[in-house]
Length: 143
Image (tube, rainbow, N blue to C red):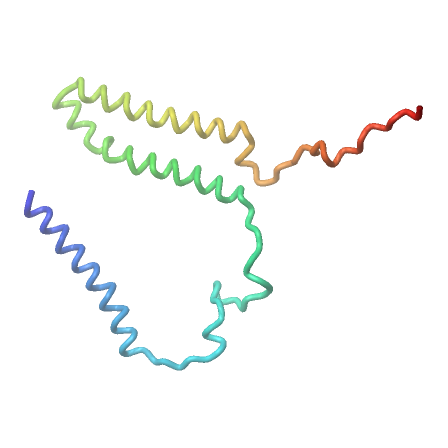
């Protein structure tokens, strides 16, 4: 147990050393020739056009969140599936518990996906119902 933790600690120290060493070496050995063009915002090699403050479509974030949720599902499911065969041979009761836990976890995520889909949150082009405020008021009868 201690040796495995030591290995992880050494790996973390070496990783930090590479990151900090690269940044430090770049600062010390890299050329410093500042100019106005280098100080501008860099985005994919294109020169910036217009202002940077504009609204993004929030549907992108909804679809991205659904993607992240299912990626987490895979990340949490894979380790259980990897050792499932050992659990079956060790204790069939433990294997059934793991199976039902995975099934329940995935079922909850699928219910969430169906809910998001039913509400139309995965649609890129959404038609909006007219609001009551924009409708014309009913005509009144003259007395």
